[in-house]
Amino acid sequence: MMKLLVCSVFFLLQAFSLEASPRVIKDNRFKDKGMTPVVGRGYSMATNTLQSTCFSKIALTRPSYDFQYKFTDLDETWKEKFSRRNELSSSLKYIFISNNFTKTVIDEGDKTYYHHHIFVSLDLDSYYHSLDEGKTGLSADAIELLRKRDIVSFFNSCGPSYIRSIGRNSKFFAMLTYKTEFVKRDTKFDSKLKAHLRSLFKSSGQETGTSRSFHRETFKKKLQINVWAYGLGKDHQADLLPTDIESFKRIVKNAILAMQSSDGSYFNGGNCSLDGKPRVSK
Image (cartoon, rainbow, N blue to C red; front, side):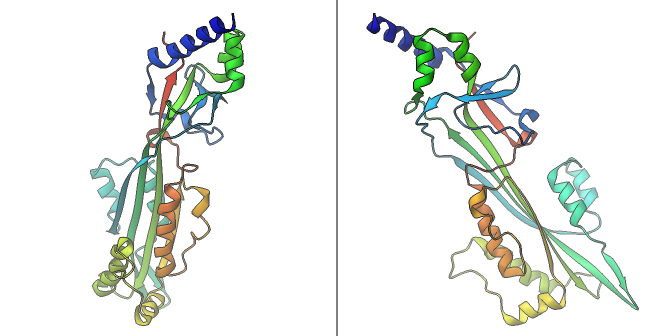
């Protein structure tokens, strides 16, 4: 009798894995930060609720990453450029620039100064962070429910589907602003500043160091650095407050490490994709 019962459970589990087809979710269902999607966790697409994790010793595949790093000059026409590129005014990039793009003309007493801006963005997508189904099995409690043929309790607890993989997106934005007495940008200072931004991903021997004269120049031009970050893992967030160009370079490197953490990442509409696999097919 026990052998027959074990065989029936085995064939039932085989039906779960062979007949079910996955569904990819890419919408705003996971915008609520109170929800915690985890690979292997039960999920109901009908009610958009997360349920218990009914797997034991979950094995995961190694994720892949797509990474973009850009920096660009901004002036007062930046909104027009956004509209030409059909970028939404509700996007995080747009909101960041709107909050950190300062007035280009500043009157201080009898003098007039001009602000110049450089916008820096890092965008990282991770995917293929998936459940390795060949190395993962059901938990003892879930198997016990199936042995008892308590299918209703099994689905109420574990959900009709489970999360097989999660695609994540992380963002890091920075606005570098400096002040001059001229309308035009200081091309020499711009070049030095951008040389530091370009050297971020070079080897330690090729990285551009900060000379004392350039360090003094950043103070003279009152260089300001404002940073926003979304979806970073907790392990590398200790140093994310820039005080000068050197600390900013360290922050960017820390942010990239934090973006690759599996316990972070921003879930908001198209910035999250979830592969939910039904336990049985219709």
